[in-house]
Image (tube, rainbow, N blue to C red; front, side):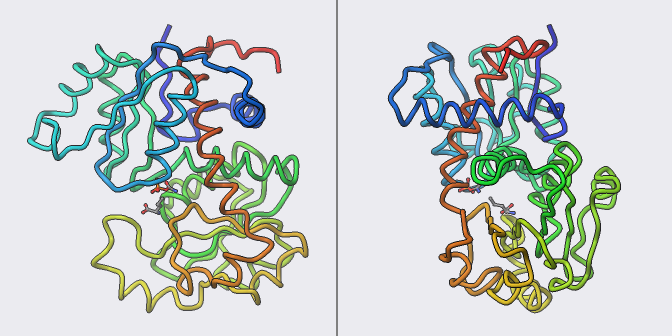
Length: 309
Ligand code: CP
Ligand code: NVA
């Protein structure tokens, strides 16, 4: 049977994505109630981090442990990856020893090359192009608090970055309208934008974009690797701050999400981030539950046939 990877949200069908969200919600209850759910006993996940992380690292490591398995943190600084051992060789060696590999890196092409040579599932823990694990958690958070997202309106404010790209994929898979509001020059990748089809629109004016929306989402203006662009980006993004005024244009019960870490008084005001519409802490917690469901899906289920819900 072919190995399933999770390099993009598009690697899951709509049915699989919906199933994973439900399983993540169930696992959250099991974990809170202390119901055993060690479906990955004896399995090992290798985690390669070429960029910093708090949430991704902790949620994968703790998730594997709660599932009865083990996680291994690999930094390029103290493995041969940092000394130039080819990705293709690292993939063939590691995938003979572990059951799955999670990679956080810069070039998306690197995770694709790793996956092409891997015998075991490879998970994208963030690349410059996509952040699909965060979308599992964001969608779980929405479903828990508001039910189905199909037909709702989501607004992406700020940079057309990796998170924005994964939101485009989520809109396509889950059937919500996505309005993207970015300063000129910071739009999402045109090919990814086109893949969203008719449910994704660019709206240059952030206030107009927020009109009647059900969910407002933003992210940092300078992603990891763009530190030298920080001041130019601060100038360009000045009108794209999520403030209480912007939230007031959305529906009265609209939610605010941010993958974190956040810069208060930059992309979002402290008032919004700490306010009643913000669900950022639920989102962060759900990284744990959503990724446990993903690991179980990739490692313990017959991925050709979903279990009955
Ligand atoms: N949201 C997210 O991926 O956080 P970390 O960078 O801390 O993993
Ligand atoms: N867009 C951000 C997300 C961090 C979780 C980055 O790539 O740095």
